[in-house]
Length: 545
Image (tube, rainbow, N blue to C red; front, side):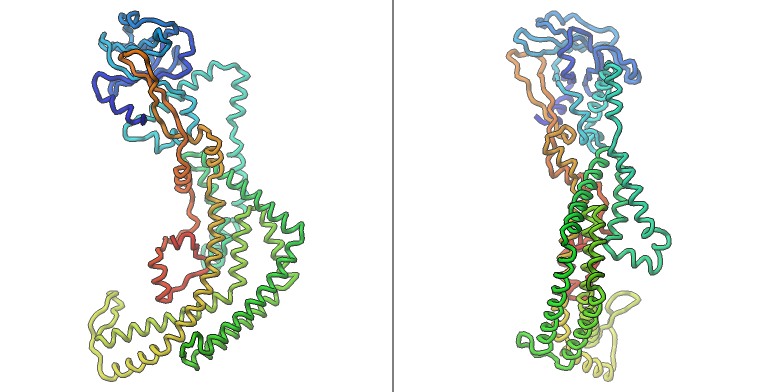
């Protein structure tokens, strides 16, 4: 039975609900102390004695517990004068099953007796979170509060040595580790995130590299975990993510530095760049001819082809400066970044890819700007033929009158740009596809970084292990009885929440890795058709959702 369904019947005037901890049923016969909520017809049994350190709760005698097998008639005349007109008697039937009698106004009433384990409730992170404890029916919050009172009262009865052990266990090593990480990332980011680098030219330099953005966002994430409402759980998640990230980064660093892979990667990289350069030469020569049988404007296509070939020549000279041992040194330094984590290495790899594919980005920008200019001019001339013009001040299309000379010049320009558009569009399409290949690979790397920094490893491990810390689903199991009585006994069970809920709750507590608004596929393709630029620092994982 659902937990809320078990409470829904409390709206009836003759039905009461009593919450009794399991551990009290193993004690000898004694009086029960607790709290009575007459407005909602609930009784919470808190202890078998007075609560000295919780006087604000106004706990008092609410009934008694008898461990012997007794008939119900024995409890019919019991009444507590100190508690007004409410008294409960808990005992065993002759069948050995539990039964409960509640006297309200000296009359026996129907009762739901719910047995629960307060320790399981206190261990659950989800039951103690603000979203669960402030529910509309105020069901879980009193149960969490009174479970805390019950456990604290039991801990006061432990020996001094047991209390010392508990105090040592309460030392949160993860919080100390989080403090150290926050200080470390603060030192690393102070050079790239200060009042001097937030303005002017330095702002553009520090905003573009993925590595700089990663360090800044990592520092903000660690700080947000320190100030989170659910500080303990968030701290453990962030620390587990960081530890796993650092371990993977160190493993990659050791693999690259100890097996001579850096020199091998450097050699294969320059062989790959030479092959890319030759393939681009072949591609440009194909575009300068009759690609796919298309009839292009020969002067324009030859001009664009030689223009891009010259950039390939400049790119080869640029890469010649990076040949070993320069590039090998860069790779060695990049691998040493593994002490900051695998995500930092991947972000630095993204920056290296952006640098080495700079020529492809330049091709794309040149072709996109030229294509965008032609589309803009053609749209303006098309409005001229229809007697329209764009009103810059009001941001709308208004009617306008043009003379013959303006229409004649507009017709000539429209014809020229229209016949040049297929050539420009072909170059724009080819280099946009090349640019998309680079961005898709960078988007894949961004997805890997997102998984490393956002998947709550600590919560997932607890969920796999079946820990009570990730329990949050409450159900009521009916305890069968052989006799018909006024009491129905339930057992309150706490089950682990679905894994998707853990992932959703964790993602809602994380800082987004990008500040740009999300862009749908429709708008993304529309912007490509209009010639808008797709910048190298756009995160495709966020932009293409």
